Length: 226
Image 1 (cartoon, rainbow, N blue to C red):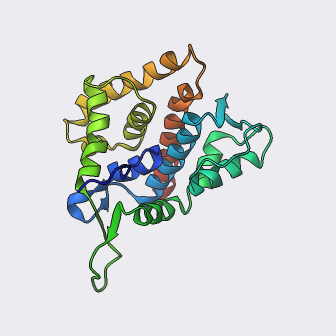
Image 2 (cartoon, rainbow, N blue to C red; image 1 turned 135 degrees about the horizontal axis):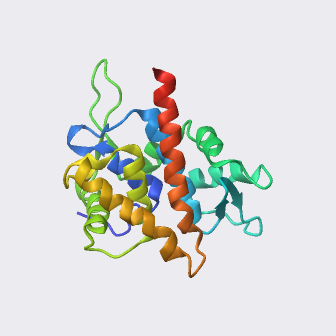
């Protein structure tokens, strides 16, 4: 049974669900270091949505007048990294510094909230997890899919997720078509985001820069591994 308030609202946690195959014991769909960089980018997007940071010329600057916590310990820790420097760190550097440990911490947070449950112990295998309610993954997938299809209007988290799906190559997670079919639709959402945010000057309009930085960091990882 679905419990009220169970579905995640943070971009980071929704990306985590998209990036795992719930039919295969929540196996990651990409290498964990690349996913960790994506989770770092998603956390920056969460801070943009909350209007706690802005991005200008690739530099992430915090709103130093806001001192209250965000309500999420992982997001607070990334914000603390940003607050340590004046005016703030360069976006790619921030992603590289923030990424280590984000995968494990996001997993732990979802377990704590009851979204993930540990699977049965298996000898000689890494710990496995199962979704407590597979409908959660279905709803997150549908949120992004409906946005790409034009069935749903803009929303900050869905639009940010479109950027991260494109950057991380998670097109197959949407179960809606080939990469060649989906990429132009994702790019359309990404291109329109700054225009939609401009009238209110909302920082979420800078989310495409975060997606681009995630792509750059992931590509650097791939090059270094060769």
